[in-house]
Image (cartoon, rainbow, N blue to C red):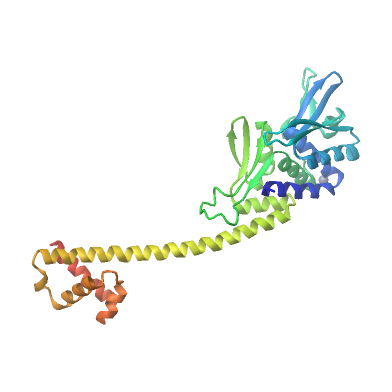
Length: 310
Ligand SMILES: [Zn+2]
């Protein structure tokens, strides 16, 4: 099961015990984001298609028991992945009961103004967001065995909307979540990239097991990245030593070529001979061998380079 699916299952379990007001808000979010409003001979009707039978059963149960609306679930399609897709049809009266539909000046029926749909009450706002995530959301986090360093690419939570006005209404109603917004094909996507913000979202939507799983990943990755940084640092130091030694050997060779080597002061000749003998030694090792300080050794190498450059 993907992380996204386990978050959705957790949310569905939480909504199953929700209060009536919240269950209705969950249903409203689902119908607005993935529902279709269709007109037929018997007036209009709502329907929601999904390959998640548990989700549809919950929507149908809420509509029937809390709102006294008749529903019907029928097989409707086969998904791209070859799974069964079901359609839940809702009686026409549901739209008015949820405040989802409104008539325009000409009496034509349509979805109500997107800005009126997000509920005000704290409990219902949470349920509404749960409905959005289960309907049009997804989330990915890095796997424990994933060794890539690019965390930004790894943590991603999004909600996809076909209705741009609704996307903007959600974004401003939940400003604290700090969603970012981007168009994608025919959709507007609200998304989070920051692992802490995703963790907050999971807590808010009552997916607490998923939040624990995410926190484990964050900790494991930060430990491993710490070890990687330390290794990178050691590699950088070795590279620095090698580069410095190469420069020093170059200077010494130049002095020999110019016939200046034999006339060098003893202190410089001594360190030059040792460097030629020990091309891989660090500055500290050289200094120790000569019983001088590191800065003393550094000074002598600087003098050699200076003479060679003349
Ligand atoms: Zn409520």
